Length: 350
Ligand SMILES: [Fe+2]
Image (cartoon, rainbow, N blue to C red):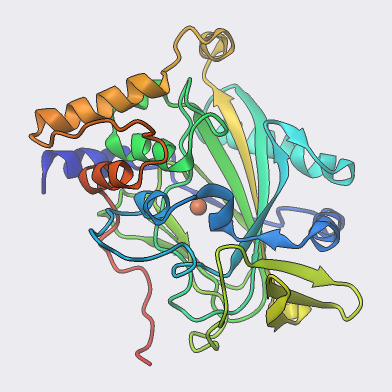
């Protein structure tokens, strides 16, 4: 194993073993959150929130094969996302208590073993039964660094920084409480708490108001297929497809433009809520975040990424529009390439 892979296998681990928790939300909180999902859709695909090219998407999971010939529509996955809160602002007053949740703040601060925490983001994923090859592979969530945070840089760059191991001194401490509701078949959660080359752990289904306290931007993880492994393929799925609730017939419709490509009954919907917090070990760390005295810059980050590659004999030029250039993104993703190699799930042969 290369020095890089050995080092990243040590770095890409959560700050503490993930904690499984039960009874995460009250029934009333769940109802209010799910009502927001029903009333404010339809919701776009997860990938459409974060990625403008195949290279950007693949760069967050593993290296990019040359001449892949794929479009974002070719690799669209039937998983949909919306935000309840961003940058510590919750969009729906009826779920403020779910976001500014003192129990969660205590839990995440205790998980990290630090005194200070604030809720930062809250999102949800919804999906229904789909063929077992539809969900994405193991991945890291977007990593934040002082100076290069969500909203300031594309997700692919945040992940590349995480997978490079070059910027750990500037890491923003984050932690999540992720909770699921699904009573159908499958839908487990697989994660690699002992590094990408360690044995994965599986949170078994059914996952009903059951959650895990984690640091998901430093630990490979994946949502496993939801529903029967031989669920019928979804024909016509695109990057721009949506999933929304139709109150008139109490069902959920997946649509591409004006075409309904799949309809789910209420019991089919797997609901995931992802609450995220930022943490500080002491006031000095918080001050550095506030006064930006210790910020990275995107230009400095790109220089360091390519300089490290050059030292290893892989000379790459930074293009005119590096954050959008598919060739450049693929070059970085091929060099800074780490992903679990251990089996994650036994899928019966068709
Ligand atoms: Fe994730």
